[in-house]
Image (cartoon, rainbow, N blue to C red; front, side, top):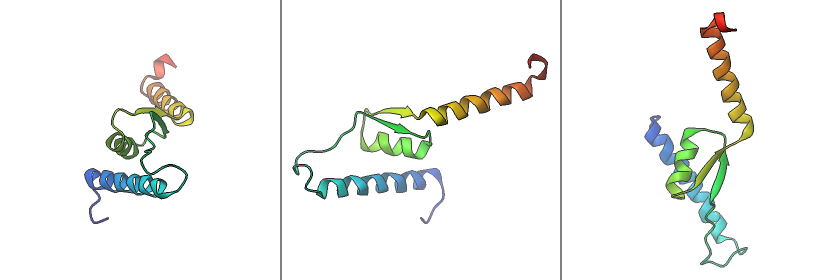
Length: 88
């Protein structure tokens, strides 16, 4: 990857997911005219992956996994408690 900016990184992720999709389409598991188009996908909350899914599958519902959602809430509560010691 020549650049390390967010746009270049997102392009790499989109390309990787597209390559995986192309490989899946080449398998004889499905007829060539049937395309796998998920309605939703569970992600870890990492923005480049979410952007890639939204680029490749417009209208997809992104669902954050339970573990990563809980980690984010815990971190937020910890930050709040540190910023407001009088309420702890």
